[in-house]
Length: 144
Image 1 (cartoon, rainbow, N blue to C red):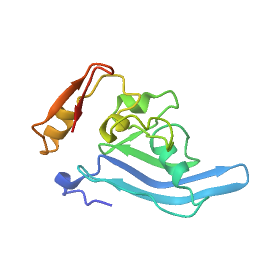
Image 2: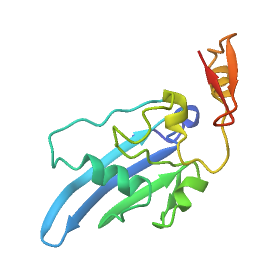
Image 3: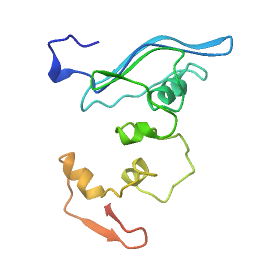
């Protein structure tokens, strides 16, 4: 967790004491999880460890049985109607065979409501490549 005076490193998304039960079966036990600006996380564990359940709670597809989700430091309840996406929280479902014709960048934004240019993402990340071409078949910009 982040101290109060450390606003430069405050989490943009946080889970505090998240628990989840399905009937009599408890699958998450008081989980704390912070996402700071610029961080990338990987959740790893055995099958049935609760990884997918936690991610679904953080993206609004499931509701926690108890605990709090904070967005930019404010408590939030994320309804399961896709409202989390409008707040910048997007769940990328694990599906290996869904879009093997897309680049990694295009796959990350699969289903996004507004088109995103791979070159603009690379530029934002400070990794813009000179060789960008337009793919008229999909109407998107691809990095080579």
